[in-house]
Structure formats: structure tokens, C-alpha cells
Amino acid sequence: LDGYPFLGQRVIDDMIVDFVCRKTKLVIEVDGGQHDQRRQADAARTRRLNRAGYRVLRFWNNEVILNTQAVLETIDQTLIEQDLQQANEPPQRRPKTHNQ
Image 1 (cartoon, rainbow, N blue to C red):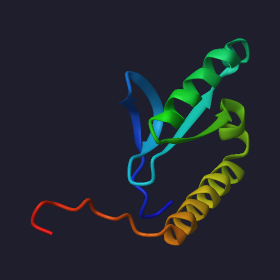
Image 2 (cartoon, rainbow, N blue to C red):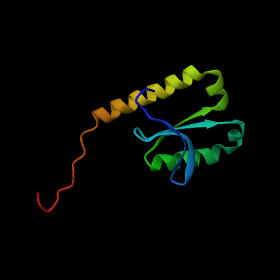
Image 3 (tube, rainbow, N blue to C red):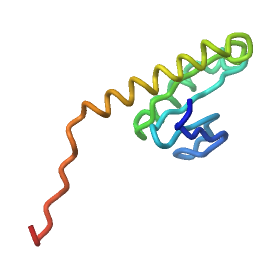
């Protein structure tokens, strides 16, 4: 994840997220056992973050602990895909001003 500055426990749109890379607008959420009962709330939270322009990856706490390498590979692959997608997007046009 070199070159991608992730910050922990940051506020986005009045919500505290576990980790965020603002450069790529990627949010990582690590869910504990209590989140099994919060599926609808988590889905609404993800939709809200998506509307704010963030992509959300969710992992179970035990995945992070027991299979850290696979979690890191998933995050890394997502970052690569996002970089490729951004590279293929046409440049945004700047709005014309009165002087143009």
C-alpha cells in the first residue's frame, strides 16, 4: 500500500470511518461480530459514503486478524483498479470564464 496514505478513525459526512485514503477516496471498514445485526445500517452507511464519492471495502475483524495477507491483497488490487480507471477517464474540462 506504498504511496497511499491511509488515516485511521476519520470523519466523513458526520460518520467516523475506520480507515480512509483521501487521495483515492477509498474507505476500509473493519466489522466486528456486532455488525452481523447491523447489516441494514451498514448498507445505508455504505450508500451514504458512496454518494459522498467514496468506495467502501468491508472486512470482518477475524479476516483481518487471521488472513491479513489476503485482506491487504484485496485492498492493493482495489487501489490498482482505481488507478487504471482514473487513467482511462477523459480529462475534465474546466468551465469557461468570461475572459475565454
